[in-house]
Amino acid sequence: MAVGPLDLAAGLDFIRPEIEQGFPWVSANIVTAAGKPIFQQIIRKKAGNIQLSITAVTAPPGKILKGIEVLSWESVLPSLLGQIRKENDKSFIIVLSNYSNEENIRIAKLFPEISLIIGADRRKGNISPKIVNNCLITQTAKQGKSQGVLDIRPGNNRHWGINSAEKLVNLQNKLGSLNWQLSRLEKKALQGEQENRRRKAVNRLQHEKEQLTLQIAGLKEAARKEADSGIRNDAFSYRFIALARKLPDDQATRVRVGELNKAIRALNKQKKQSAGRTQRQSGTSPSHNITGSDLCATCHTVQADFWKGTSHASAYETLVDKGRNFDIGCLFCHLTLNLKTAADTDMRQADLLSFPAELQAVGCETCHGPGKKHSIRPRQFHLVKTPSEELCLTCHTEEHDGDFNYLRKRDLISCPAG
Ligand code: HEC
Ligand code: HEC
Ligand code: HEC
Ligand code: HEC
Image (spheres, rainbow, N blue to C red):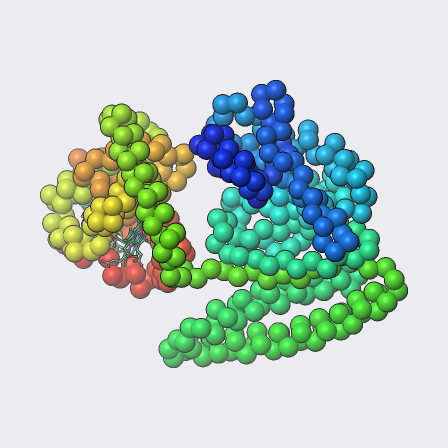
């Protein structure tokens, strides 16, 4: 397990017991102020007669941590890889990295002796295995939202198969994504013309799949012949499985998560008290120029009455009911925000926690934009009449609303004309 920046967030003392209990944390570039490595730098394992050497590079955390220094990968990898190669020049080297994918590609280009980089880019989802300079780079979706099996069949030289094997990789990638598309399409039966289109797409994909399967079989045969020649390249296959949204909770985990949420709530309650007033006047505040729905209601009674009947009006209450209204991870989408400002700025936690009562809902200005000036001179300062799909999608993300359809859902919440 590579140490990530968040694993250090609570300080070294927090994970020290785990280090002592032998949890296999690994990081090559986290050192004490005196430059001594804190975690194991290399984990060595045997797979048959292959020597596996696993190391990790930790991306620098956002804040300075007491007693911990995070060196750059450039300053640790050359000597570390040299050491591994000296021990065994056929070692299969795996680097776990939580740097960005671009940075991982740079690492691969510099060090052809690395066979595999498993990434954890926070902004990227699933990355199918790609060969860069004889190094395989891959990652499953962020935060463990999909699981992956990477099956490696090591050869007798540290080289990923170039000819047939590399083509095989690409075709298998294609087959993987095809299967995924198919499984999605096959699940949902639709109505009328849409259903016809869906069927056609399924047929087309199935035909493609048959062709691919044939090609793959041919290539496998070629690869077998290559193997007969005595030189066996490293080869792999993989499978990613996206986790279903509605998997039942594991009871023990649910209890622990409940306790954690309680602790977060207590902490944030304290924070809110010490944070004091929000800076609503500051241009970077997510509530900048927002008045709250009550004022809008004084002139737009018809729309306000309608809005009160939608669940947007009670979105904050929903969090209160669940005891999650002090959870920063939830508030962003259950409040009236200046989404334009909020999306571009690193939102201050205290801002979200100390939102004024009149903005505790997905209010008018979420959709129509900040309306301070409009409320004073409505005929001079106009608001957005029809909120865009893009705006809805800031909150109605795939994760929180799997079947968001703009036109259909907009109909449900469109305020009536006065
Ligand atoms: C700031 C985040 C946010 C934005 C922007 C947003 N929504 Fe929502 N929406 C929510 C939340 C949160 C809920 C669920 C509230 C609850 O159940 O407590 C919701 C619920 C809904 C519902 C269910 C309504 C009901 O009464 O059952 C519809 C439909 C909907 N949204 C459509 C839209 C559309 C269309 C847009 C864009 C015009 C949009 N939303 C913009 C956060 C948002
Ligand atoms: C990215 C935006 C977003 C975040 C973050 C978010 N929600 Fe929501 N939430 C929504 C939207 C959108 C809906 C409405 C979904 C729909 O209409 O199908 C919703 C609906 C809900 C509902 C009512 C529907 C249901 O599923 O029971 C609850 C409860 C809820 N959210 C709780 C939470 C909690 C707790 C958190 C924090 C862990 C959270 N939400 C974080 C966007 C978000
Ligand atoms: C979730 C998004 C959303 C929220 C929240 C929302 N509206 Fe709307 N509003 C819409 C949509 C969509 C329309 C329809 C636009 C159209 O027909 O082009 C609309 C239309 C309007 C109109 C124009 C009506 C007309 O046709 O003349 C007014 C005025 C209005 N809303 C005011 C409000 C007020 C006041 C609130 C809060 C009490 C509010 N809206 C909350 C989405 C929203
Ligand atoms: C003092 C009364 C008043 C207040 C307060 C007010 N409005 Fe309006 N609003 C109007 C009038 C009048 C119009 C029609 C403007 C026109 O046709 O030139 C209007 C128009 C609108 C429109 C249609 C688009 C436009 O700008 O022409 C929307 C959307 C809207 N208001 C939303 C809101 C929201 C959201 C708030 C609260 C932040 C709000 N209004 C507060 C009087 C008001």
